[in-house]
Amino acid sequence: MPRKGYSTVRTDPSQWVEISVPAIVSEGLFQLVQEQLAENRKFAIINMSWPRTPDARWYVNYGIALVGAIVILVGVLYMTLFRPYEKGRAPASDAWKNR
Image (tube, rainbow, N blue to C red; front, side, top):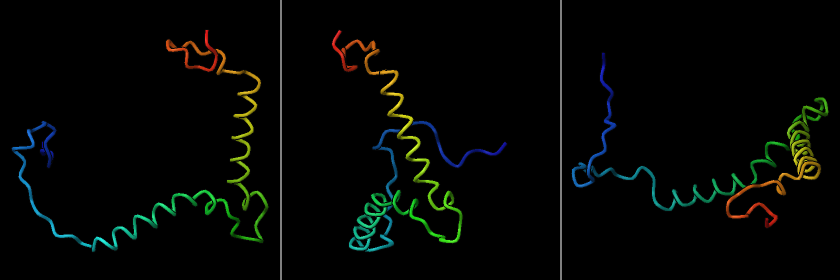
């Protein structure tokens, strides 16, 4: 039976063997990419839901926006009709109403 290429036993950091690895990209490029990644994460839902094919059926272009609206509507209806925030039994009374 082949062995794993790594250990699952914790060792003290003083026993670790440190290996210096040269940077593949410059620090400036790394920071620039991190900023771009943060911006991409902010606008990802807009990018996914933006219609791309004008000749496709409407539900193909607006599927993500439609499903998102349905999920939000169902959540609002659930919170309005069943009021789960009033039925909490948290020991610290942090479920909306003080009991």
